[in-house]
Amino acid sequence: MSAAEEELYSLLVPLADERLIIPRACVAEVVRFTAPEHREGSQNWMLGTINWNGRALPIVAYEGAIGKDIPATTGRTRVVVFYSSTGSIQAGYFGIVTQGFPQLVRVNREVLKLESTDGWPEGAPVLCRVKMINEYPLVPHLEALERMIAQETVEN
Image 1 (spheres, rainbow, N blue to C red):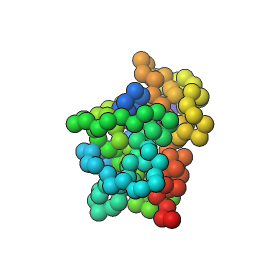
Image 2: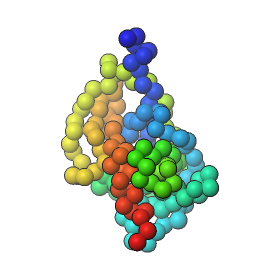
Image 3: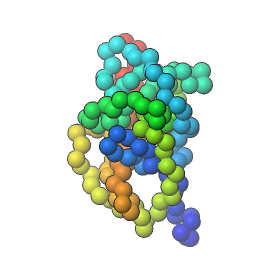
């Protein structure tokens, strides 16, 4: 296999004190942040929903989902819209609030190495932390995050 065939287009998603690395194919769109409609009784990381393409898109603060403080929104705050892969989210999509625009990168085995598989609370939607040249991004467990969102958005 050639090196080009083993490369994966990915996005480095800026959070407050971390970055996520995700496959580009998981992302539907990046949109500007608008204040979500909050649902009473939700966890603090579940910010609410925004209207996106006629859908009630659930929006989360990933920092809160992994036990960190939720950052304030700024003029650079964006929402990365993800495709739902589990089918457990009614809208078929969900959004993660970011602290800027994601950066497109190509990764392969030579630049991406496992750094750690712990360091966050049990049950946090994180698979691992990787080393990518001089970066140490988190690999989110998107399916676990979807299950968390589904639990928060179920009508009682």
